[in-house]
Length: 192
Image 1 (cartoon, rainbow, N blue to C red):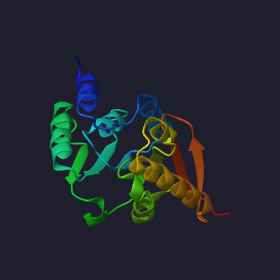
Image 2 (tube, rainbow, N blue to C red):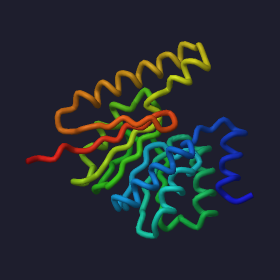
Image 3 (cartoon, one colour):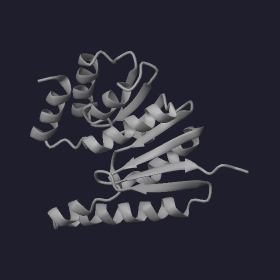
Image 4 (cartoon, rainbow, N blue to C red):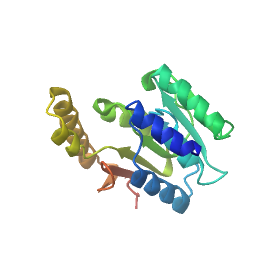
């Protein structure tokens, strides 16, 4: 079993949400096609998506933030085992406590769903001129169908509000893709 398979098994056995394979494949194609080499990820979990994104090119550098210490420690191990600790910087903290500096070609939001609007507002100024913000889990309809809990209904409602927020932004345009649990791909509008 290779490292990625071990990570997938760990995620499954321990109920750790990681990006779905079709989402990862889309991200990898996007990174390669548009040369998005400087990446910020919100929500590392066990480092799965950071490793996948970094594997696209030796030029890729990923800064990833995870607040859960147990997941952070697992991610550190996985990044080290993948021999990518020189190219993936992982921070253990709440995203709102981190002073994010520099410009990023790609910001991948895959953290607490209820905070997506606040995440977007925090990172939008860190986007390079031709950069893109990709938000995961936009269409969590399966969650609503699978569980009838108040919590899942609230998350689904928050994601609807986030979609509406993205649609109303004046300086950005967003494409919604039906990949996995849904992606929102947001870019700055080109000034003419």
